[in-house]
Length: 140
Image 1 (cartoon, rainbow, N blue to C red):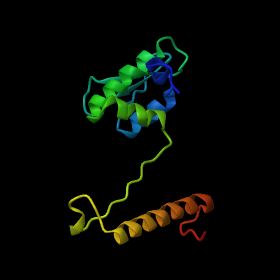
Image 2 (cartoon, rainbow, N blue to C red; image 1 turned 90 degrees about the vertical axis):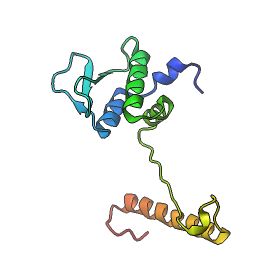
Image 3 (cartoon, one colour; image 1 turned 120 degrees about the horizontal axis):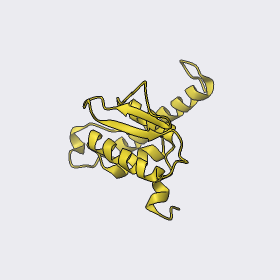
């Protein structure tokens, strides 16, 4: 799918990078140089992200690489994980867990597993219905 690392780094859109960083607590500065969005770290006064307003700027991939590295350092996550989040900005991760004394070794009885899957299915169906019907109590 991707022919090079540069091509991957050119994929995330500037607005998605900005929204991601802001969701993580980065603060946009009122005054930014022309063509750039500048966000200040929520924890370190002198740490900033410089995000081009357009992906058409020269060396956009270099900007993204620097942004990903700074975000990875800030979040204590791998650059690969940060880049994956930036490439799929409208994706959510949903995790389901079961807590019992019997699953301490990483396995659960078949009946509990089927119950977990059925509960996950109902949960996702309910969420989908609420989006479709825009009601507080979906009935689809």
